[in-house]
Image (cartoon, rainbow, N blue to C red; front, side):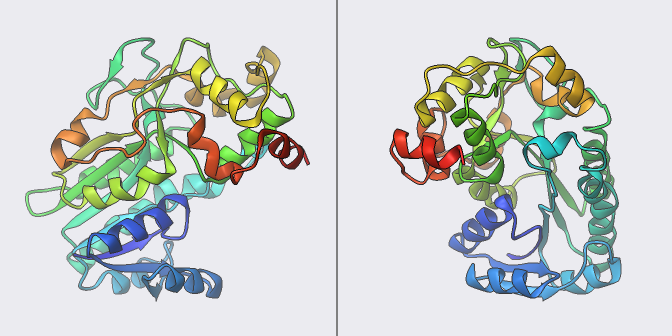
Length: 312
C-alpha cells in the first residue's frame, strides 16, 4: 500500500516506518522541519511537506494514498506532566489534529485511517479482564483521546475503514522509560496504584509491527499490548534493571499534586489484546514483561555504571 504517516518521527512513528518498509509498503511521512526531513530520509521513507493543523496541505499530501496513519502525539515526560498547560499541545493533536486528518482523508478519497490511542481510557476493573467492549471512564486527561476515536469512527462507513489502536503504556527504548529509570536509580518511588493492580504495557519493539498489521484489520477499536503485568512485578523489574533492592509507590501527597492527570495511569487494567491478535495475526515479540525490556534504555551498562549514569 501507499501509506502516509503523521507523527512518523516519534517513538511509535519511527518503529512504524521501519515495519511498514519491511512489509513492502510505500511509506511517506509528513514533515514540518528540515530536521524531521533529514530523519525521515534516514529512515528510508519519503518526506512530504504538510502541517497537521492545515487541512489543505494534508489533503495534498494524502493524494493517491491507500491509507493514512496518524501517530502524532506530544506527551510531556516525567514531572513535566503535572505542570499547568503541559498537555495543551497533545490535547489539540488528539482533537483538532485528528479532525483535520479525517477531513483531509475524505477530501483525498483515502479509504483507510489508522489512529493511535491509549488503553487507559478504560475504567478501573480490578482483576477483571478488559476487552474492547468494557466500560471506559472519561476525565480531563482521557477526553481528548476519546474525541479523536469518535472522529475516526464517524469517518468509518461501508466504503471506508477506520482502525483505532489502544496501545498499552510504552516501555523500552523511549524517553518515558528512561525517566522512570532515572527515578528508580535515585531510589525515588515509581509505583502507581496498588501493588496487586494490573498494568497494560507494550514494548517499543512491538509498536511498528502492530501498526503494519492494522493495515489489514477490519474497522474497529483494538487493544494492543503484551500480557498484563501486576504493578509489583513492573516496579520489581525497574529495581532489578538499575540494581537497587526495593522501590516504593507514590504517596497520597504526590497523587494529590498530580490530580486527575495521574489517575487514569494508576487504574487497574488487565487488558486483553486477543481481538487484535485474532483479526490480524499480530503477535508481540515481547509477550511478557521482565527487566530485559529495559536493557535498550539502559544502553547495556552494568548495574554499577547504570546507577552512576542515571543518577546524574
